[in-house]
Length: 310
Image (tube, rainbow, N blue to C red; front, top):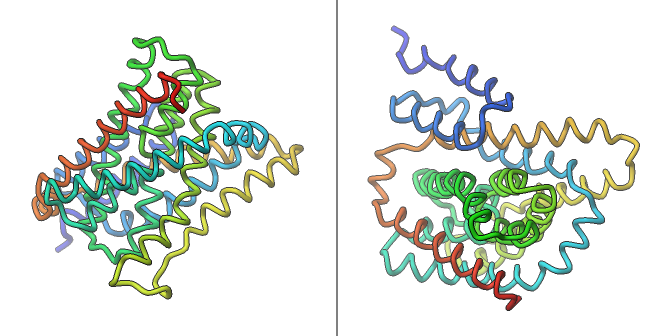
């Protein structure tokens, strides 16, 4: 007899198709995935491709970025990126010990918070040889907080009267994943969108050195096991390509759109792969770690940016 779970796989096809439509936002997609998970409707046939979809989507989003604007923003955001990435990683590891969370989960959450959410976790996980439940939990924590940030950050920015440039810098530092950074920036304004996306690019580049640092300090892995994040280099190549061949602009618009919607699909798959059993296995400490790290990062970065220290 056919298992009920397999008979409901058609829901995945339907929801993935809906994720291509504009009214399905990242938080809604994540919520739909979590609902399927709670109903115990899960399909490895789809969720096994989550990391690949994340990476392909990041690359495709590069078609929507302007090289000149990226370089201009990069010069002003480089210092704050060095300080914030390093600080968040150290703070994440410290909080991991305080909350007594699993070491691999702590590193994954810290990397996702410090750099670029799911993309960073996808790159670091193979190096750590982390278990499936550790990856799922870290991704779940990061994307749940992404959804919250996407909803509340623009309201906080307007309430505090932040300029678009300030908000863009803050969003790039305090919001984990590229998709939510892009979403929050787009809601706030065109300048905020450009600044947020450009600064997030700088942070994404840190996946490369961070991967090697983690590999160096992790005794359980060797250089042969490092999963080099080639998709980030391809992402940069895409930006250079679009700048070199501007006549293909209409095609770039479609490819960039596909990348943004791909991120929404990935969020749905992440949500559907969150298991209560896996969460219990790691415990509430990991959630406490993720939330605490995110709140400290958000508050401190906002104070620093608005005070003009950096």
